[in-house]
Image (tube, rainbow, N blue to C red; front, side):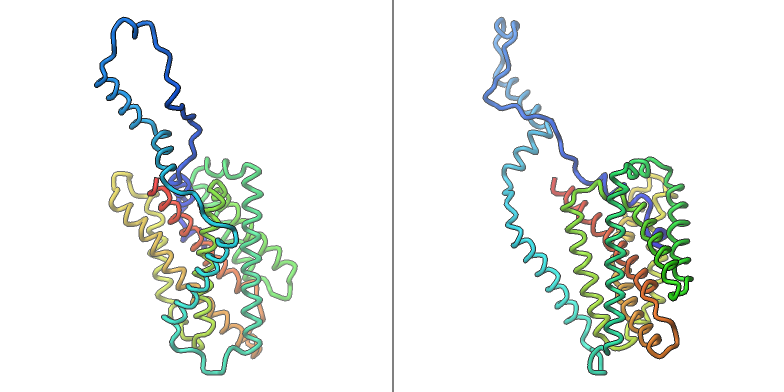
Length: 339
């Protein structure tokens, strides 16, 4: 359901919001243009010359960008400083989130070894799936798939995306975990379907994608830590409210397909619901899915269900992708606002 809860225009709107680099050359001010023959006959008025120069400066985005960039320092620190800054963001987010939301921890003396191994394997498969999606999206982008995808009919992209994503996901979940070859093939198909839709993100700057990935890892890591150390089944009641929230986010995501362009105010509010409401909803799903993984671990230990790591990782992959896309759009909007 990664495509029901995602707007088909989200990627193109994110890309269009980012500024494009200009290749307009700048002419130095000390190189004056050659005087024409008519300029020797009649002297130019200093007032009109100044007005023309001021208007030319105002209408030249290249010159304005040049002066704006010279006033802002470009030093961003060494690689070690940036890594330390990123680690501080993740660590501080984990500590703050745990202090606020995790006042009541487990009473059984900590997480049992079986649950810990089950959770670690689940997150390892989640990271493997996200990495597979990233590599496949980059390969598809280099092959020219992104250009063809963005030129297609959005309804066609939506329909094919729903069939490919939901179909492969349901087939993966329905496959018995003992048949691991078929299960991993279907799981890989699901990841490739996600990569095919997300490949246009590769048009964006790598630095912006890296920042969005860092923020997504920080957000999901802190929330998952809270869910793993909280009381057993403390947040499982969130399933119903989160499902209602997903429905609202999905309806707001389809608004640009049915509302006219003249309804600008309505489209603005649906954009905010899809963007910031989606962040809250999928952050809650991360908390819910983490506790659901631990519940399934206890059930598998008792022999009630089979141990199925792949099925558990799919839910966390969808949480990661939906949070990541919204982080990319927020950072893109902030960068466009600074220009």
